[in-house]
Length: 486
Image: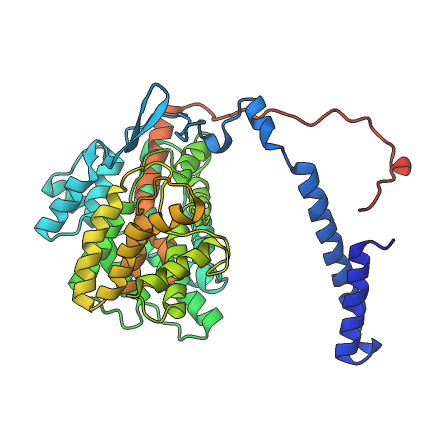
């Protein structure tokens, strides 16, 4: 019996010969590439077989998969003053659903948000100060801090050319992580983990991020999408939100409303407790005593994942796919049919997932989504996007019932921050490529606060335990090994 891959290999060779018209095409490189790909595919199957772990073994060894308890609550691995998330309470080991709350240094984020909205002023810089230093600034302290950030908007000399334009990436989060690592080489004192030095590095990174994401985006547009390369210098007197909009748009133009709404998005994304994946990554990496650039680059890598920060892009893509496949987005029957197709893995990305609903912590409501919903409605009325806003409301209010009807199971599925932030970014004409980098720009304030906290209060290498379950093997000399192929 021939191995299935050998047959596939023969078929591939014959197909290429027929298509290209003869043996002259079959160079050594072509054959080598095919053989290498065949070998890698077979080794991948072998790896999956040898690395698989039966689910029952996790129960047997009392392992908390995903650092989750059996009732869905997170395993407590540390203490933090930076931020806290309330999505449930536990009574007699049972998880009880409650309205969601988010606190920055003990302050309800809703109070901060409403104050910035009421006073019509930018709030992200104030929230950054609060997260870093643990208290709200006075007017003079905020002015000084904002001025300090403004002085850190320009990237080091030659950085944009040498580190971004010369080696662009098709993924902005990848380029962002690489840029953070590269900044190590531009720092005269990169490995000093004293609080004063790490604070200096943190402020510089927070100042640099708008330019990093904007230039990475423009480099991608030029290299991969054949667009004109247009770079705008950051302006120190402008807020983070204003600089971002100015630098990602070819004309550099934006309205005050657009900038204030983006600023409020940054405020709501700035922190989410120490247990979210990227903030935990920051604590974990920082506990080793490594440099700031390594810790923040690792956090960027975490946020890049579609199970974490990449979810906002998934919402944007889902909404775009829906609008291209449903002629009338006000037709609730057609919408229901579309979402059933998603659940059947017949529509969108064929994964059976509806993005923008549900959260690991929040059970009844995501406070960020509630606040963003009001912002989204204002923006919809301003830009004539009422039908698109109604579509998001349909997802929030109707899709949980569609899910329950289809699966026969009802579970908490509140709208999460990604649903309405996705809408806001679309309404602001912010490219999907920028959605997760914007998340990173906001969350950087929280990451830096958590890194400083770990250096001050942690002072112990994180070293969790894994249970080794592989049976002991008897060594077999190379000449005697004869494994059977599938």
